[in-house]
Figure 1 (cartoon, rainbow, N blue to C red):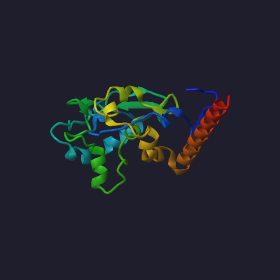
Figure 2 (tube, one colour):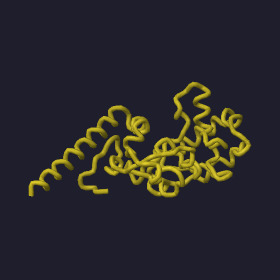
Figure 3 (spheres, helix red, strand yellow):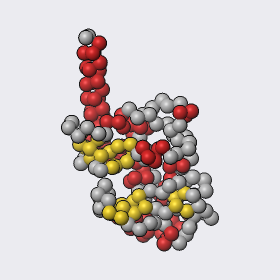
Figure 4 (cartoon, helix red, strand yellow):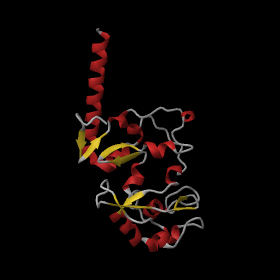
Length: 200
């Protein structure tokens, strides 16, 4: 990413690739199979909900809370500076049930709360991610998926278009509008360059 003219919104550098990278998802929860990193505070909050989460788990999920998370590690891309990964159990994130549904989201729905209230931010953001202070594309994770974002899915939208709700969730309405203005600015500059090139 070119750091000379980098756009920053809410403290995050914006990778312009999010406006053009094609993404189509045939969602079956596959992206959750590998687990997700949570912020330490998210990790601690989820553990306080254990008595509500456990009854919603099925036979493919571990109900012992010591099997839910990996060891904490330092990571500056997380607000607390500490990341804690969810464990993979039976080939999927411990919070993913046999139907490809997130138990944390099921809990929110059951309590008539906002659907992402209990989900880790990085789980909500995919196929976007925050890496070294930049909002960018989770290329590595996308590339290892067997269903999502494959050519046969007929690409017809970008990650930016596919992730409107996620971007508003991360940046807020004002931050999203700033992001939209940045997108229009890039497109305007691109059109200007193309026009100048055609006049040569």
